[in-house]
Image (cartoon, rainbow, N blue to C red):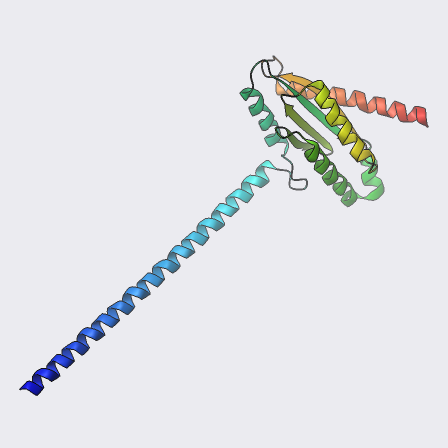
Length: 212
């Protein structure tokens, strides 16, 4: 009888140990599956988030130059003006490459693209910390410098043109003072800056003719 009891006890211990190990294995397997699922979900979320950020960037930036595109750049200017006090002054600059069609026709569009990229780099590097630069379209750019003065705008113009001229890149820049509390719309300010830019472009042409 005693031997039977020992045998039964040993068998029971074996059954319990086997059941425990099986359930422990099931538990850890479930944990591993759960962790893998969480990692998979996390990776999917990160991929979706990354795609969203890329889509947002492409929607708001000019892909070639990395600057704000026209729509987002103008929105930045409008938002900045709305957040400024009525007495605050800012500067809006309109920039255009001189004879850019001739550059494309002579050296090709790939070279012209590199010129645009280089101009964008210089414009952004010289831009004040609180300012914005965007590619307005084609070979046109705009810059917006809040809390700036006409003197600061002239300094910016001189620095940009000086750097680019050394690389044989000619760019005309027209600036217009803007006021948060002014009656003009952003389109009117842009038109005024554009007119000033063309005046400078014409003056530069006349100056080159006189030199020749």
